[in-house]
Length: 496
Image 1 (cartoon, rainbow, N blue to C red):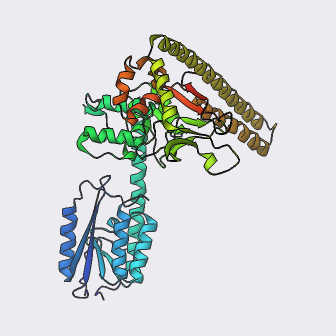
Image 2: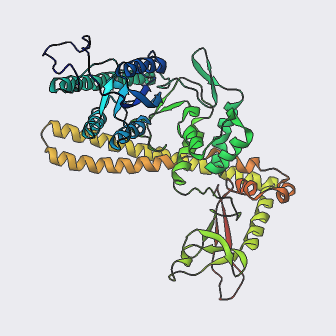
Image 3: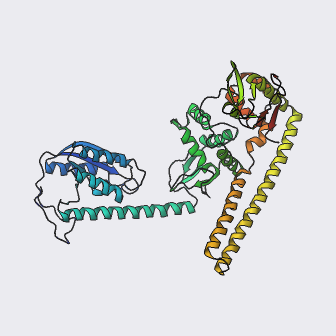
């Protein structure tokens, strides 16, 4: 196929190409990839020009161009791999004969991806050719191509190592690993400063979440406000909140993005928009609501608050005997518990009367005092848990000393250390939940004096967002006798 059929050992890869006899009129597919991490100077235009010249010299026709702008050729999760697979599949289907790239590194810098692409194309009778790195189909040529691929993988590893070191250095200095835009902040002389418009909105997002709003409601609010002129998504909103940036923190999301309650955070040098108490309450609330969020419009006011007084299960709203009713969820799946139900308007009327009472000066004063006592109890519990964690740390240190002194064997050490670590992990989980929700703590004091005048005009969502910081749960107990409409309803406030 080619005039040059052998490369002598030691011949330079960059040596001038000998004349080749290429099959005339081959159908070619051209790949152009630019990774912003390391190829800022290698523009797509430069690659296109070199590939087109290479194609013209061989008399081939480029039937399709595929571009990957700012797409990595070494990361496992890269949009580039789907495009590379598409190109290889076209060769396998016989739609193109050759894949052109500017350099072989544009195909892939990852060893496995490069080897698989090369093997699939060669097996299909096609070829991958570089416009600037000349090889031939002889064993020596394939060896040269393999060495180029190995060099590309080596360079990718070096680049990755440099970036990891750069990210770690930036994180140690209290700045984000990457310097992109951050919602709620603006760049001032290279520093992140609170944005006067979006900063307060970001702080409000945490307070709204702690008041009972879910991701769907927060997303709808942002989209209605037209923030940053973009369309927000549920995941996008929660990613911003989980990042902890508004609390003055930097979250670690590599190599895997963990939930906020498991993620590692370090302190940043940028000014926070929320205090640490609010952040800790957010993380605790996030963990509690994990996998329990609903994205459907609210149809029943007390969904998520009502509990069955017989079995303790949640009660869901549904049409029962032709009327909107709260029904014990468990009773619909088993006959081992009583079917506790209550017509929606009855329990909602009781809750409305309760809210009216909370709006009085006397009730507010009692609630504020009760909240203060609960906060103090929570702080005491948290302090006790911290002391227990320190005890477990001390036990690990003493156990390590015993191992060093050969008092215990390595196996005995492992068994005991695992036991201590298990207790410590359980304590840390309890500590993460022993926080005060600042929205709940101020909910009673912030309740409008004229709440009952506003109540009739409020939507179901607005009423629910008012109730959630005030009410921990509403327990509906079974009727004392069969057929009775009387139900004992207990409303448990958040400050109890």
